[in-house]
Image 1 (cartoon, rainbow, N blue to C red):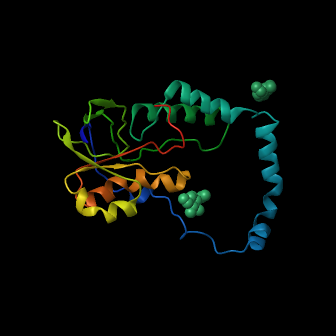
Image 2 (image 1 turned 180 degrees about the vertical axis):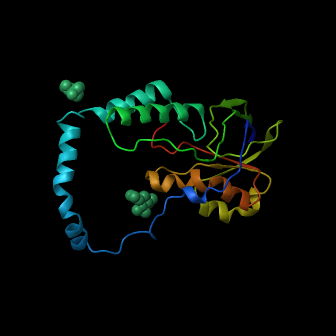
Image 3 (image 1 turned 135 degrees about the vertical axis):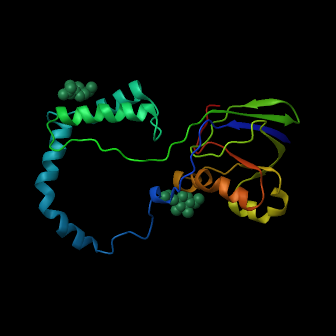
Length: 213
Ligand SMILES: *[C@@H]1O[C@H](CO)[C@@H](O)[C@H](O)[C@H]1NC(C)=O
Ligand SMILES: *[C@@H]1O[C@H](CO)[C@@H](O)[C@H](O)[C@H]1NC(C)=O
């Protein structure tokens, strides 16, 4: 099988992503369940008031309605995009209208990445155009794209076992979907692991139990 991958990325800024990484395991509190229970007991009334406001009171449906407005009118909100700016303005206005104190905006620097155009075509054993989407922060191919054989693997273990076969190829991850936290590792680490074994590019199936395509 041969694939031609053409991913053109308009503007790419490479920034360290480490500051945005979720912390699993380490930062977890060592307090016992009993200690936590005692520590938060005094917030019971405040929590009840918030829940009542959101579920039965003046703010009933507000979260859903605001989310619907964002999704319908703003759409995807990649960091540094015009639509994120629009979303921030809407939220700023909403919070002011709610009468919250100290609602203000501050200028910040954030990573900015634009998707550009992307396409993938299987050349052998037959021509087949595929629907692809560049993952956020992907590095673009050269303008002429990348044409290479693919190596299909179902796990990082298989990739490491077959490392000598991966050099110069496009690694295709066909990981089984067990649960999101397991499967999403291929989205997060797939390109890096493919690069470590000398692959030219990597593709990954959607991180979902079901695909309509
Ligand atoms: C919230 O949505 C429900 C279901 O659509 C509706 O019955 C209810 O009247 C809404 N509440 C408010 C305050 O708009
Ligand atoms: C996800 O599935 C893996 C097995 O594939 C399992 O080891 C892990 O505990 C599961 N994680 C969650 C959060 O269910």
